[in-house]
Image (cartoon, rainbow, N blue to C red):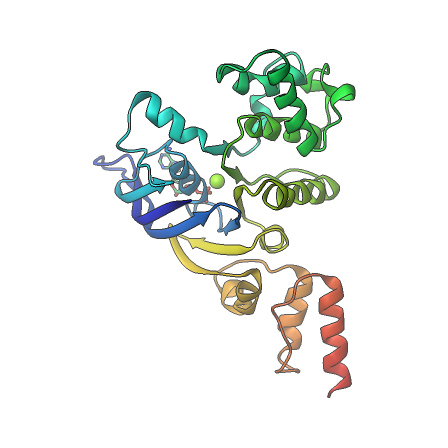
Length: 285
Ligand SMILES: Nc1ncnc2c1ncn2[C@@H]1O[C@H](COP(=O)(O)OP(=O)(O)O)[C@@H](O)[C@H]1O
Ligand SMILES: [Mg+2]
């Protein structure tokens, strides 16, 4: 089961003088039980790519299949069912919280699916628990009175409550303080591990992606210029710096040290692994 892109292109304002190519020749597969990260600078097409994943937009060229179904060819109830497989969390999703209580906000989607009574409550509890939100403390609260990180988690819980097979998040950690950012990324990681969902996350911060994802795709000007494991992406760090990406500071240091220690492994993740690699290089000189 997977979401697959075959030679996909996307243009905004098709046929108009201000037509804009946002994506070109995208070939990509997102499997269930995998955590895919997409990095790219602003305007590289990340958000457009996500909107093609759940059929909000149809490709201008090529084809997108969600578990073999083509959202561009389906109509009515069938397309709704297909889209439900893919939960899309927009950037700054807390802007769309609208209900008077956390409970009603998260219950909105499942209610529309026909859930009522204890089944509905169980679903809300389940989604809140996954997002590390204490049910009894928070279910009656007005979303507007929560912290930024809590609001973001309530908004994500609202999408999770639909039990999608894939969850697609646009810049989920943007605008949060460092603690909120770390906590949220840890939760996102859990979704794949514990629920076996396919998770796609977009960020312009390499650090967030390499610390969270199994596989990384680099998008530049609407095209995939590189893909691989976080380790492989870091090993191509110099190339990425040249096209304007900012490496995590510790990896930048490794990159610089490599000039003096050519055998240094620059594909490491996290302070501890990097420190011991530098230690090893110094001892072996
Ligand atoms: N509604 C739109 N109409 C026209 N052009 C758009 C629209 N949305 C995005 N674009 C353009 O498409 C390109 C890709 O945008 P987007 O997918 O939002 O990139 P990212 O999320 O990586 O910042 C950009 O050049 C952007 O200006
Ligand atoms: Mg975007």
